[in-house]
Amino acid sequence: MRNLGRCVLGILAVALSQPRSAQLIPFKHALGCVRALVDFNMMAQYRSHTVGTITYMEDYLDTFHKMKDIFLEFRVTKHIRAKIDEQRRELRHDRHKTRERMAPSKRRRMRDAEREEETELRMDFIFCESQFNFIKMHLLSHLCDHIRQFGNIPMYSTEFGELGHKTQIKAGWRQWNKNDASRQIMQSYSRQHGIRMRLLNLESLRRCGADLSPDMVEQLDTTSTTTAPDIRRRMLKGRRDYVSNMADFSRVLGVSIKIICRGLIRYSRHNLPPERRLPEDPEILKSLPVELLTQLEIPVLAFQETEIYDIHCVRCTGALHFRNQGVAMIGFG
Figure 1 (spheres, rainbow, N blue to C red):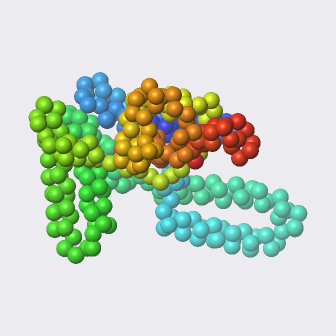
Figure 2 (spheres, one colour):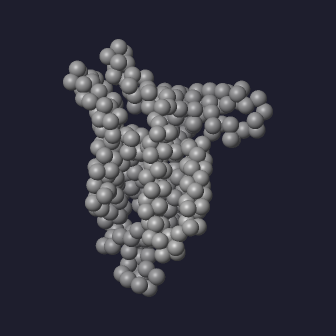
Figure 3 (tube, one colour):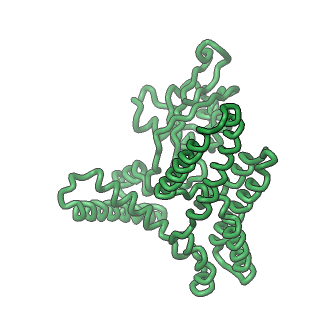
């Protein structure tokens, strides 16, 4: 809801931007209802509150409750839908008995009026039977009182615990053999955290100038103390022109040339044979032709995410035309 609130109102405003004359008031109420709920949700995320902000929240919530009936037709349950169908069948059965004594021309004239009547009866029945009486809707009315008593709401968020459950418990359950799974998961993550603490301590000692063995320094250079990003395997396609060297490549990606050079040097040291290794001078790397990149995977933060990355697979066509249809370019895909 937090990320959705940043864009849902704009999307809804565009979707309802050209109403017909009969839709003006319903569309206005729908936009007002969503706007009030989004404003209430955004203000509930404040780290500190005053009497004024709490008053704003109460006003937004009152506005939402006044206008939320516009969405009642989407709260139709299976039980209500069954009642509507039964009402429609009974109505049509009664009309069929009446039509038997009418002329065919008169029957055709009455069909449009009967459809409108069915629609009106259906909406009246929905507004009478449907409701927003569920627990999450009721909890909104207590948020302002909770803020007055206990402080800001994000302080009690369960988001981090849920993320830990996903990465620690669920991932561990899928990886192991389900034989005494709780003990295996706890032991595995205890070892992982112990190793990570050891690496952090060694990294801190190296920064302070401690004398570490060459093997230990090499291990620190090849091991990351940060958690690997959650990478979704979704390919993003696109093309970029006017890229001839690593400096242009850095500019197009919006990634620092220092980070690219560091990554290329690390890759060259650990993956390429000595005769094919890249030069380690940053100035030379900047001027290298981009044709060297035959295949590269670049993690890019997903839209409105902080820990989820999309993979951009890059290949360079060099001086060749892309599929014989244009100038040389870098292809993303």
